[in-house]
Length: 178
Image (cartoon, rainbow, N blue to C red; front, top):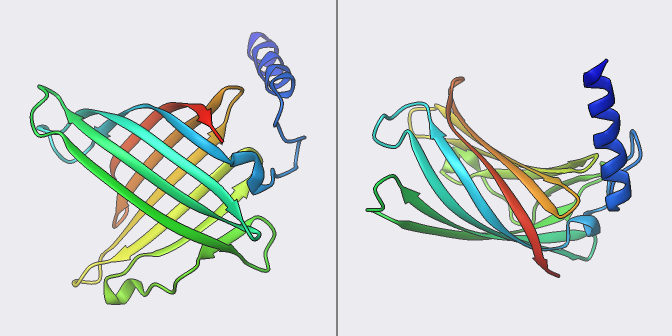
C-alpha cells in the first residue's frame, strides 16, 4: 500500500512540474530541448582499478527540422584525481517514418568500424543506442536513457559487450539553459 501511495505522489509531482507525458503518451523532441549539466557515477564491472569514477556531464539537445542535434561533454574523474579525461561529441538525428524514432543523419556501417546510432522517445525518456562491431565480429552496444524530471533529467548509461554489462553510469543533470 505504501508503495502505491509513493508512486501516486511521484506521478502527481511529475505532472505538477510540467512537461510530463500523460500515461501512454510520448513527449515531442522539443520537450528535451536545452542544456543540462550535472554529475554521474560510473561503475565498471570489468576493472577493479576503474571500479567507480565520477563524471561531470554536459548535454545539449537542439530540435531542428523535425530531428535534433545532440552534443555532449563528459569529464572523467577517476578515484584519486589522477588521469582526468575529457570526451566530447555531437550527432544529428533525423526523423524516421516511425513516430518518436530517429536515425543518425549520416549512414554509419558497424561492420566498417563506424557505429550505427538511433534514438527513440518513449514517454519522458529519450534513448540513444549506439551499436559497434569490432574486427573479430563481437558487438558492443551503448545505451543512453535521458529521462526528464521536474528540474532536469536523469541519465542512465549502459555499455554491454557480447552480453554482459561492462559499465553503467547514473547521473542527475539540471536544466541550465535553452
